[in-house]
Length: 385
Image 1 (cartoon, rainbow, N blue to C red):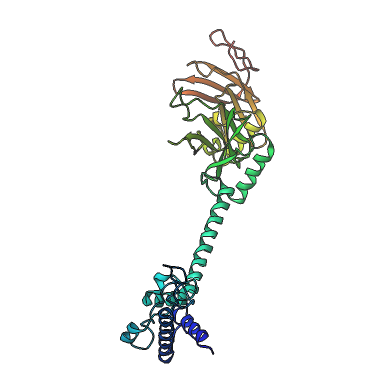
Image 2 (cartoon, rainbow, N blue to C red):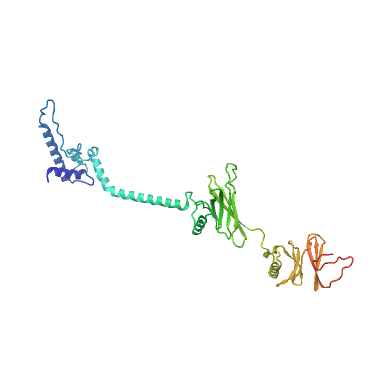
């Protein structure tokens, strides 16, 4: 191999990325570099004088094998630190940074960096992939749930949201889920081009929707409190009412408050037991009386006698099949008032006392004409004449 080619080969291996020389190659590189410098000095000393007066022909001090001054052999080559320090300089390869070439330690560092480059690239690629996945996830969440980070929806809630949007009742894109409690979801939407705000509840047996004109917060600082409210029955029984209303937080966002309560008043059927309950149901079904106003005021043997203190003010006698005696229009508010109804062999006399109505059962009674000191009783109405 020609000397120039061998010199370049050794320089590439000594100073290029991933290179390295053994001791013999380092000695060979030093000898070739010394020969190049000796030849360049001799050529400069024998340079001819220019025929032009006062002018000289300049020749390069080094051969055209590189740019700038070549670095010394790196100390990491196995020639000893002292030998590396005394190694003659050689021209650097084309494109070599003179500052790096002048420092053999930096050359060695570059070789070490070259060996670690693939691992660093793999780490950077992994970090970039993780960041991309994070951005994609955030973007998908933004598209699905909105920029305000609203609560995630179940399949049932997504179906309700789809129905609201498809109904055309509300402004497109305005339907938002604002809260959930007791299995009830509260929704907010606008309609009529933002002229109305609405609150909706799902799922309920009947539609629960309420809309109102948006208040002006500048006119009334409390205007947003309870402006949107709606209520409905939680189930078909009608025993539980659920109510929701929307208020604004300090930043103007909608917040739903949902509450429920059991409807006031006990179930009238809990007031009676056994046969009494069965007969009371017969009276309610046959006469339309309200069960909560029925009261047992006496017995005819084992048969209860009933007073209805509702709007009709009636006396009832009934069995498990039907109502057998009925007298309505009683005066149950005036103390001392009396009324009488007669059946074959039995008379029922109602008298109002300071403790309430009292019924007297007279067995074997027969209709008798009224005496001058006893008022007559109309059998059809039970009222005294």
